[in-house]
Length: 201
Image 1 (spheres, rainbow, N blue to C red):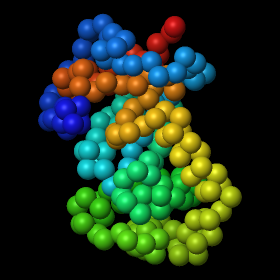
Image 2 (cartoon, one colour):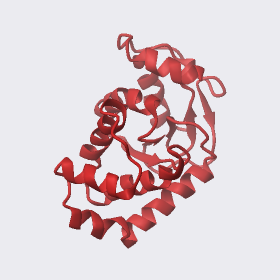
Image 3 (cartoon, helix red, strand yellow):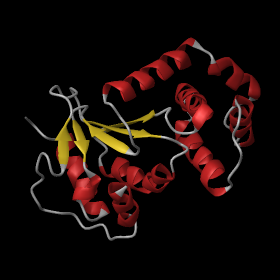
């Protein structure tokens, strides 16, 4: 897809901020009428997605450049075949255990660098253990817990509500969907997200 190629290419371009005016319908789409009460950036992603792996650097730059904005992620289930839903649950376990900052890079590395086969929940469990993030008992206790089940349901509902069909997709303030193909470098992309996060209607 063109917009995903633009994102990956943007990683190689200099951080040049743009002073351009951002335009609805060109740089972003309004996907809901009501915005969140506070600035918020949500990335819909999948640990199986190579474009999401490449986008990781941009996501980190955005998070560092906007300390006043809440950043969150929603894992989709439509990639990874039969393991798609299991990976949603794996991410939910990482969130509930408070280790998502460590486990996202660990899973990206296992899948996209080491090409580790992940064909079962036991394989996911082992990645948690191998990275010293959680013991087998901690994983087993969390994986079917009320908190994890609730978060899985919440993420699946969010994907359905926003009709997400491709990743990475970024929604700002629960209202604006970013159009990455409308910008030419990382600086412009971050400027666009920042503009939307602080946009007053």
